[in-house]
Length: 341
Image (cartoon, rainbow, N blue to C red; front, side, top):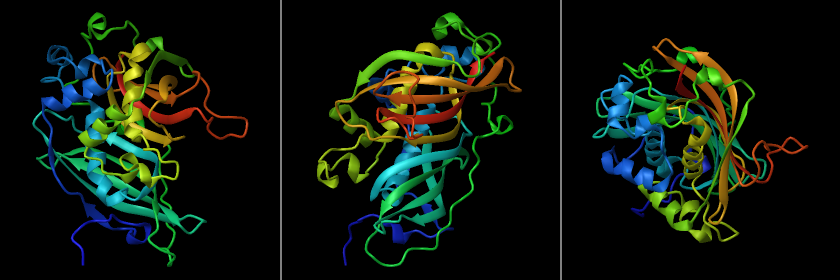
């Protein structure tokens, strides 16, 4: 018998299982300082209490992706410790804002399993929910991950869940009190409002950041993400540590400030794929495509649906002639954000 945890393998998952993830995490203002040290994050609502109060909130909530990373990190020892790769996301919604002092817990339900044709790994789908200390849902999302098998034995029966292609506008949760009627565009950094964007428009965010091993390791530890591929260089045949996909998400979101400074809050994650692996030394750039625009019931608040692409190449390039992601594309993320109309 051993007291150590080798992590779950593909055979250890069954549809309907509910996993309670260990180690609650209390989030305070140090988290914001570290987040802003890691990423060039400048969206005003997540930077200034005064700005947030002018928009009807009690004070500045923590960045939406802090919620995502913290919840995600809770799940890693139980879902993706033996992962080959994290494959995608769907049906993600931010439901309650994260405030300094909140304590995050998480649970996941297994909703799908499918063995790969090589018989050495399989795909596991889970629906994860993060909650605060009051039991209120902070966010929920589906993700699917490729996990190694323990051996050559039989696999569980295949179940592939049906997932919505996008979160509907009616299901977006607008933070209580949010009001962009008196929105200060000068302080926010750009004059562009929702009506200035059009469906199909592509925005090159211009700037690039070269990823270093040290910052990636700091970020992954910050979120208590223990996946072996991010830390142990012997875990991959190429001897490289894989950059945590969430690190690329936050970096691309921060870069998108240049052109989308007023896309203040992420409220839904419609879909996403980590198209190609990212390693230390890669220079990441970002571009966005406007997919949809909608009104909400909150005063002065609109919703913009965006495709956010992180790439080592040029803006606008996504797939090759074969329909597959271009080799330089790292991330393809589809999300809803809130913006003044």
